[in-house]
Image (cartoon, rainbow, N blue to C red; front, side):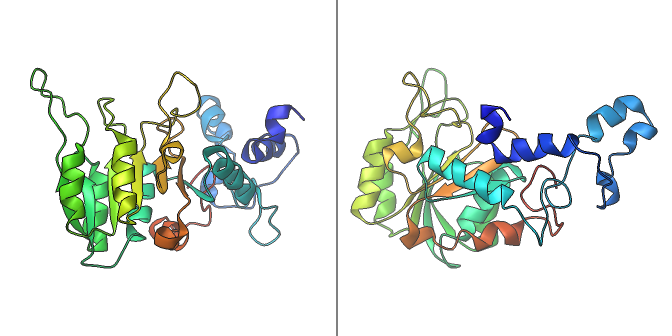
Length: 258
C-alpha cells in the first residue's frame, strides 16, 4: 500500500474495490455492467462506486467515511467535519439550518451565494444585509467594511455569515471582523467555497480557522465533495443532524456518489 493510500481511507477503499473480483448487490445504477452495452461509456460509468454496498457496508461498517472526515477535521483544525455530495449549496443549507430558530437574525454579506439566500428562507431566518465597499473604477465589490458589521451587530444576530473570498477574489479585513463579532460572543461562519487552497502554503492567505472563525464550508476543487467543518460547539452543535435531513434519502450517504 502506498503512503497516499494509508492516509486517504476513501481512496484506499476505492482502489481496493477493484483489486478483488466482486458481484455488486446494489441499485441498478451501480452494477458496473455498462461496459457490456458500450465500452467507452462503461469506462466512465463503471468506476462510479457507492459508499454503502461498495466502499463500505451499512451494518458491518469499517467506518471508512468517518475516518476520512476525521482526517479532514484534523487538516483544517476543526473538531468536526462532514462531507457533502450536494456541493457547497447543500453544505451552506445544512449549516444555516443549525444557526437558529425561525425569526432569528443573521448578519449576511450582500454578495452571498444564492444557496445562502434559499437556506435563510427555508430556515425562516431574517437577514441583516451587510454591503461591501465598491471599487468605483471597476464596479467590483470589495470586502465588507468594519462599519457594516458594527451596524449589523447592533441588531443582535445569532451569527455572522461571510462569503470569503468573494467570487472575484476579494477578501475583507477578516481578523478585524472576526474580533468584532467575538466581542459580542457571536459566531462567524464562512462560505469559503472558492478558498479551499487557502492556508496550505505560506504565499497564500490563511484559511478561516487560522483567523479564528467558528464554522467553515469549503471546496477542495469546486467539485461535489465539500466538507462542512466547525469548532465552536456552543452555537453550532446541531450541525450533525442537519446534513442528513437535507440530503437524498438514498443509502449512499456522503460517499463518492449519490
